[in-house]
Image 1 (tube, rainbow, N blue to C red):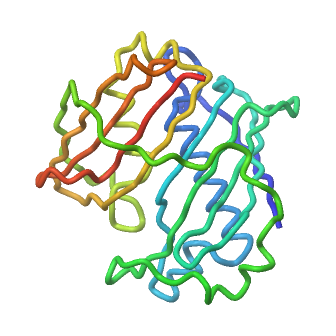
Image 2: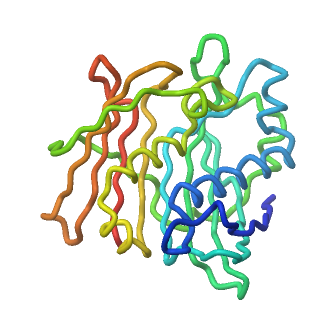
Length: 243
């Protein structure tokens, strides 16, 4: 079973170019995932009754263009598979004319809220009826490896960064990383792909280091990011690549 959800790009969703911010697009994609899971009966509120919740493990998004202020956008979403620990949810994004402007593939795990350990997905009673026999629309999220860090910024996690699971909201990482890029680099980003790997949780009060670097040896310039905790452990890695 698949669902379609319509969202409008509002004033608060855009930057100085009048285009949607990258983390706005990420928020809308994750919002569609949550709305559809709720409709299918295994959303966060349903899982919370059993002291469990969904967490995002990896995410890949390709955007052919960024929508502008006042545009309506439809997100079509479906679940293509379940494994023992991970499930794959896919999205395509279309503008008002029905033209596809983007796509996403997201990998999710279910955790116990007390132990923070992953749970077996097989007991989900309605998982079979929720599957759609359709391949992901883009390449699955890539593993993001280490790189040479050429710039570092410190960030202290504050209350507004924390989500309903008690850890840093998934899109906050993308917001912090994008904010390290120069304005001219952001202005030139329209058609792009970003991959994010979520490795560990970050919580209120932690001081994080946002490491960044640019790989110009690739066919196109690729921006690399690695967010580390005080112990130097990578908690989130990502790449942003123009298409």
